[in-house]
Image (cartoon, rainbow, N blue to C red; front, side):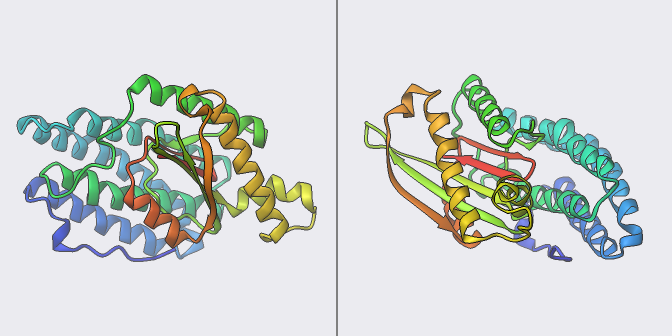
Length: 287
């Protein structure tokens, strides 16, 4: 994991109370990353991180929301939902994962990776969008009830394929990288000529513990057979999503491709996803 987050002046949005807190957050995150290198301190790092982010969420999010309301920011409700989800769902899910694994190294790395990724993504996009420096990634979402229906469908399919109920750590995954994995993109053409895309990021740990265990009990790395099995699984995943939604049930596949993380991230940055979920160990992005 990268052990340093660098603050640049271009990250400032021009509102001192917000910019000051962002600089402080980067500084705190760097301290957590530095201390995490010491295994003896990793549990303390996570406990302090949870405590700090809970306090930050209450104070800083409130300050941001007061400012957004004062300038009648158009994306206020969406931005507030991002805050609420991080505070009420993401942090508790990460805390539960840490405690249930007794602060295992993978869980510690996951916690720090999610927090760092969320902080960077939210600061550089959603917070800068408040003053018009960039456009919010979540500004053109489908109606909330449709988002909920898609999310529930994805969770049910995930459970059916992996035989485990996923903890949804984030409903607004920002394309961050957490460890090694397989990245896969499927592109479909809809009847009205529009493109519909789905991208997966499967963490290596999930694949080895599920599909990999069926292929070979001794498998401890991603093999060509496991990659092909994962591609088939992803296609099946999308077909089951399509069967639940008439608008995409008849679309035809036009392209499927394995990606490097860099390619995956470039595709992600160009789009505004309708759904971008981060269940444990797999990310699914619907564009």
